[in-house]
Length: 307
Image 1 (cartoon, rainbow, N blue to C red):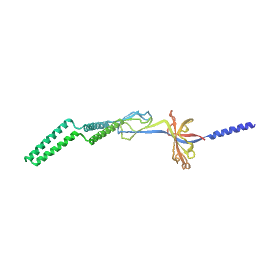
Image 2: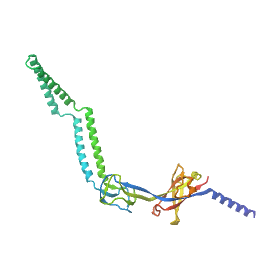
Image 3: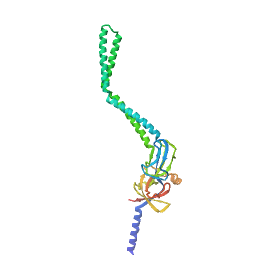
Image 4: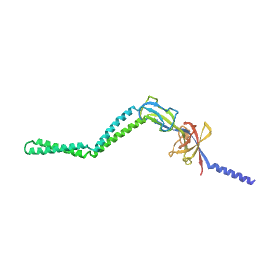
């Protein structure tokens, strides 16, 4: 009889220890999907719509096409400006042509000889002082032209020409991007849940075109009290259930824990509960079969291991 009592006592003790080793934190939140709004990067008329609401798209898939005629014309104009700037830069870099150097040297020597003749004639009082001054001026001008032609462009002129070329090259690249952006592609994978434009409409830069929702994983934000916060860890296992599938459990994990306290949202608690400070916790749940839907309430249970 005493042995039976001892066995029963041990079982009760072990069961009690086991039940105290584990506890749970339960909360309710709303299922959310990651949504990305795709906006126009170039303005123009919507020429063709390829993807529509409900379509599943991958990154890089073409969604719609915007008329790029105006951008192409601007690009062609800028390309001509770039070619002109490139030619001016090469001219500044290479300096004067050999025939220009020879011609300027010949003009300089002729002016030098004319100046000598004028000086002789002036000493002989055959020409006026004004004619001598004009000869000196021609000599000085031709001498400077010859020296400049031999020396070529200054470094500052070369730098300025290169800067003009680089500027037009950047503008040309910007216009090329506008032309490319007229073909709108998906920048995120998921399901198109909203299309904001119709064929023929005019779009502007930054205008919303599509909303893409990723249903492969869903997020649920719950709120835990200050006393329970130390029990919640990143990557902690979470069990999610919804009313529509009462017998099914979805396994997720904690991916975010707020470091700032806030008041409980007013739409999910009573007035008394709203005055309490809580911390938001985000739970991520894989949704490979797409049964979890955005906007549906879900119950989340976090299993806590007692130390």
